[in-house]
Structures are given as structure tokens and as C-alpha cells.
Length: 113
Length: 115
Image (cartoon, rainbow over all chains, first blue to last red; front, side, top):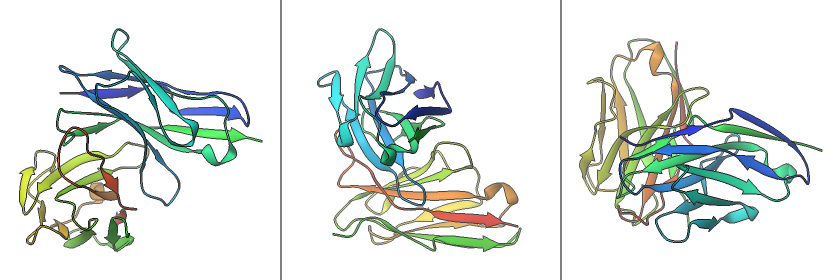
């Protein structure tokens, strides 16, 4: 079965500095990969997804992620953090039909002024 | 258009009681998913419906958990003889159809507390 490991439970950055949230996946076939964001008391929102097209995926709010098969990684980046980016971020891997989505444990992003 | 809605937003119950959690998917979405998110963890898949039928219920932890979607729209997650370990946020998601390129849209969740 597929799974993901989010390497950091908590990341803290200063406003205006780059963001890197790390994710490694395990899958026996060509996976679909997603990043979701969860703000307090709000539903999960899709940031971006990889489904075997371009390996560099651009998402909303300036986030992007690169699928690296050789490293089994799908790290999330943003060049310049904003205070509104503070939230919980989840890396997700799914089966071919996106029906069995496996979430990582999450990374809490804190943005300092 | 309205997103996925879930009711109640909070539910407090006593150990041993029966609870029902409701999910209203986005209109026209044929696929519906239930997840459970325990404190400090990511959501965990419970069950997936395609239309009225449960296409995959492999994530249900035991036979105290059951879900229905009788008309292919609203779904109810039912938990019998609740235990303290059932305390979690229960999330519902829907997608237009199941399939590789489809996005799941999540509701805000129901926070269940079992005393």
C-alpha cells in the first residue's frame, strides 16, 4: 500500500523567507500526489496535485512542488512566506483512481513577523 | 455554490451511546468519502461511496461503524456503542466522479467527543 512521510512536524520561518515542507512517498505504482492545507476551523483545501504530467507542479498562493521519482520525494516550496500561510499542511498519496488517499501526519507551518 | 457541509459541527456524547454524523456533498458529486482525523494526525480513510453503494469500506475500524448514502447524495456515518477512542474529527469529502484527475473537496468536519 502507498504511504507518505512528512519529515518535519513543525517548520517555523520568518515572513518573506522561503518555505520548504518535505514529503517522501512510497508507492508500488505511479502515484498521484497532493498537498492540502488546513487552516484552523476550516476544511482542507487543495494546494496542488501531481498526476503524471509535468513534474514541477504549480499551485495556488504561490506554492509549487516537484515530483522526483529517483528520490521518491514531493517537497512543497514557496519563495516568500506570508503571514496568511501559517497553517497545517498535508502531503497525500493516492492510488490510480484517487479513491484511497493516504495522508501524512502533517507539518505545522509557523510564520514569524 | 455551496461546498460540502457537515452537521453537527460538534458532538459530545457519553461512552456507549449511538451517534449519527451527516454529510451533504456538493450538488452533482457522485463520489463521497469519509475520513477520521485524530489529534495531531492526518486524516485516515474510512469509506468511499460511488453513488448509493459503498465501493470501498476497508477503512472502517470495526463493525460499530457503518455509513449509508441511500439516495446517492447525503450520507450518514453511524457509530454504535461509542468508545472514548472514537473521539476525533470526522471529515467528509466529495468529488465529481471518482478517477485519477478528480479533486476531493472537504467539508469542515464534525468534532466528536466521547466522554
